[in-house]
Image (tube, rainbow, N blue to C red; front, side):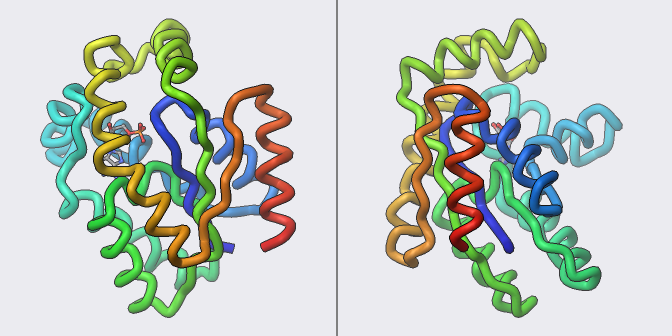
Length: 189
Ligand code: AMP
């Protein structure tokens, strides 16, 4: 099964992605984690991405698409299914993903939205700053990340609805309850 997990910043995508990937043996592809890893290695890509990430904006599609292309091709060779966490982030990225998947002759089974209202997100992210210390979890950057989500990523809801691939999960509640909602979706795919 090849899955997209998406939702606003602070919806709990990372936590749920880890649980689902473990249970269903999927490759967890988190573009945010890949970029943070490049930053910690001090690579050229990391240096280019850091400034943009710290401002809460999206890094260029070219950078992200190269990362995705390589990873999906490797998975195809090894016959491994995957979960995309943090990609696609815009309609353009979703179209580019369709193109890559068509070329590799693999298909998408579902795009699962973890939905959380804005006021809950703000509290969660400010708490995460205390526990994880992410540079982009400050109050100022949060406003810009939320705006980027609602302007650029939220249109994916209609995009995947039109393709009959959208599944909706209520992301407010206990981690286990949210995980069960996702598991029952996975069982029906
Ligand atoms: P995340 O960990 O998914 O919240 O991503 C952290 C930051 O990495 C984002 O705010 C973006 O700056 C960058 N990023 C992650 N994924 C993407 C993507 N698919 N397209 C563009 N930028 C991304």
